[in-house]
Image (cartoon, rainbow, N blue to C red; front, top):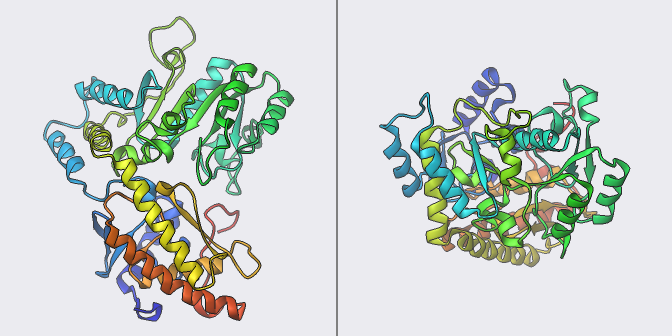
Amino acid sequence: MNTDELLLPRSRQANERLHALIPGGAHTYSKGDDQYPEGLAPVISHGHGARVWDVDGNSYLEYGSGLRSVSLGHAHPRVIEAVRRELDRGSNFVRPSIIEVEAAERFLATVPTAEMVKFAKNGSDVTTAAVRLARAVTGRLRVAVCSDHPFFSVDDWFIGTTPMSAGIPAATTELTVAFPYGDLAATEELLTRYQDEIACLILEPATSTEPPPGYLAGLRELADRHGCLLVFDEMITGLRWSEAGAQGLYGVVPDLSTFGKALGNGFAVSALAGRREVMERGGLRHSGDRVFLLSTTHGAETHSLAAAMAVLTTYVEEGVTARLHALGERLAAGVRDAAASHGVGEHVVVRGRASNLVFSTLDENGQPSQPYRTLFLRELLAGGVLAPSFVVSSALSDADVDHTVDVVAQACAVYRKALDAADPTPWVGGRPVKPVFRRLA
């Protein structure tokens, strides 16, 4: 199918309804139709395994499922069965359910570098709780975030540092400072410049690049020496890097860490974990000032905790992390070969850990290009591949990956034509896709 044949009339109608009722037309900005070619933003009807179907009846192989949250594939039987068992037992009570302690025990057995855990519903809940806790423990106000990582929270302390800072007081933003990933000297300079002011260093321990040798251990030493906490945001690395996250893989223990996404395989659950003496400041068994750490009506929803337990068990028993890496390696090799064979190997670039692949689309001058990204996404969609990234789920088969590579090859042939013309416009089909973080709509 070429892009002119991929018509999505029902999806277009559904997108109009979404925009009429929901600001942005989606409940997550990165799911917005501005992230997809004009007129080619499918609205999903259902999903199973590695496939999703839109309301027009088209089927797609899906990558980056649920913003990396559905790592086992949609409607995974072990997860669904665990959830189903809980549904008839009630979902929320006036006192803790026994499943809360069982889920905590299962989590801490899987992530042994942590000593206590508290569950919530989304990533921002727990990253903001980590920041609040670090401020309370250290008595300091400033937060140092890694400038190379795109997202930490919807809350003011982070969003105020992005181009979408409207409505956020400057006084709040001024308390957040930044350090570059992989540069210990720059981080030490920051800690020295704000001596005794920084409550924590918060970063993703790894993303599209591996941490330089000794880097994470160096951050651990810097945090200890300057009296601040080290916080690992493991929303993405948790389970995908190892069952125990990046901290388990690289052997560096943070004071606090946050998990989510893959933890629930699409069900809403996140976790703040860390050292007992720090976490207890949000509890009842200490003599200091109380910290309002996490207190959410739905944080301990029973079926979501059952989903998390099933996910953790499946990862450990079935070696899911290793499978994600194997699938990702097959995909990365195939995409690189396809790009090279069509002369676009320096323009369609796959990077990242095999379990967490992303791609860049570069123009004739080697610069990131939204029009070329639009061209590439259009061709993938026409081939039945929905891929804002190349992040794999374990539900993909080798045949699925091989089909994806064939579609990528077709897209690369069109990409080559656009490069030769030095103008992708004829293949863009409307306005280009847009970056999520931008000042104006």
